[in-house]
Image (cartoon, rainbow, N blue to C red; front, side):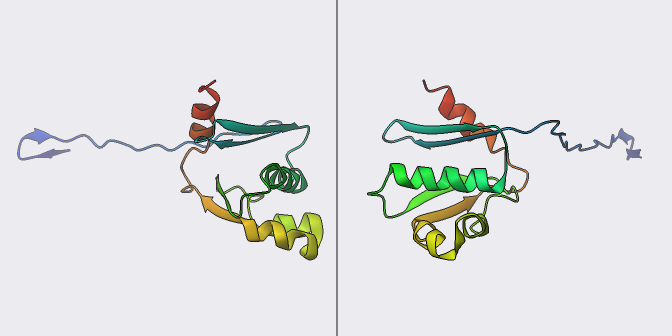
Length: 120
């Protein structure tokens, strides 16, 4: 393609999708200003596994009125999973303390975790 004697090339933009062959659950939380980390590894990556991680995270910081969590848009990362796992009555006090922040759909959620892990 040319415009006024200048050759213009169309640059194709390509996105990627990766395929998960086998999933394990590795959940990590960081409190950078305090230098604290909390990590759990689980055999599976289910909604209940993530709900238990969130419960355990909140139990580790009982003095915190609000805990801000930054997550990707995976279908297990929402408030419904706590209700499904623990029931409405037990989930309610947990949900009051969580402030959910989701990354943009195409953002890499691993960047934050990888940066935190390399701060050893």
